[in-house]
Image 1 (cartoon, rainbow over the protein chains, first blue to last red):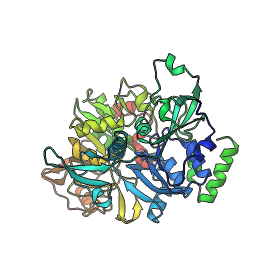
Image 2 (cartoon, rainbow over the protein chains, first blue to last red; image 1 turned 135 degrees about the vertical axis):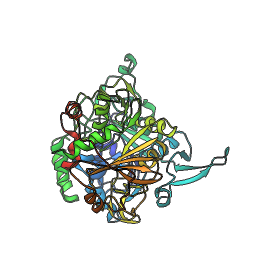
Image 3 (cartoon, each protein chain N blue to C red; image 1 turned 180 degrees about the horizontal axis):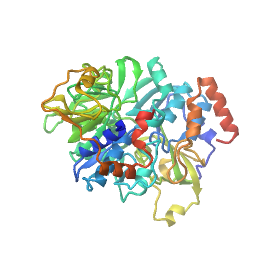
Image 4 (cartoon, rainbow over the protein chains, first blue to last red; image 1 turned 60 degrees about the vertical axis):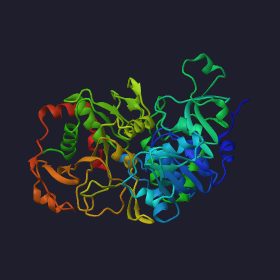
Length: 268
Length: 239
């Protein structure tokens, strides 16, 4: 059964308030076309999950659509610097910053993927993070009696992942760095794939390079060339500095609306 | 005139020993270049681990925007995902993690989280990325920061993101090392003096034996230009 759909219809299925995992890392292979569409549809109260986010998180913050961000690092890295809209939202008390170590996001997703309520984690002993956040705790090892840190499971309602190749059934293949995308596909209740290329059914059967995300975990597939732009997509395109700068120059949600509208008319 | 980014890259490279497993993350062009330099010179068997997930990438294509991109995967022979690099550290297999932050204290505490009160921060920072688990589990955490002032090196952190196995802190002015739980001055970079460092540091400066950091050698400078033709080591000073 084909799961091929339009970006608009696919994103309509994601409700306000969803716990939403975004694939990629910083300015690399983030699902930007889907992020644009989430902003265009005016989604509210989204609770974002990512190890290291950048423009994807920052854009949704500017759109006013974010209630919380569970992440280890939110920044455009050294070249473009801090995420101004995320910062502002947190500093004004509109967005809850749930700071993790990147690994505790991974551990929380693993807990969900393994069907467990929490995951023990090494480290985090001398840190204010467990004091500041209720999703960290100290638990007793039932075998040795020693204390160990733990992080609560994060089971996303949806994971949105941009990949290089998918077929209509939802089998999806990532080339290059996988980041946390494969794990997210296992941890999330539902998965939306946007793809640079839709391959023929049977393509992965004939290839030695199998899809790492199997069709039955996937709920929607969207053909979206340049779907990670202006972030990079390995083997396809580098990050688009001018476009990122153009976004960073936007002052408010209204400016973002027209900026997104211009890009919508250009088919982005 | 020695550029601070060159002095820092060389100082950080000298801390890497041959054969060690070494990780750097996002916003980490300077330690990435330091690691490539060490591998070119005295530590050819150091193992380069990163977020892109390629082990010992050749990095034919430099990427000035991200130090976590696909170029760190493209020409590597083996893959180890970020999750697996963390796992390696958790089980005691990571020798060196390069990490940064915005505030540091004399006990090796790091704040990469926020300025002000954590319930209502004045400034929300990017967050510690892997720090809170890597600094306690890696054998050595080497810190770097391209700013050296009283707001950066402080007596009291606004928030303790993590304290753990910090071994060194490299700044544009000097090299600190941890000694019995205390951050002490180890060497002063050329072009500055202890008075400048003391007046730029929020915690008391203490030392056992004070050296001058040897300036970059001609061989180090030549290798730096080879491994970093795009001058990515200078990004944090430009921005």
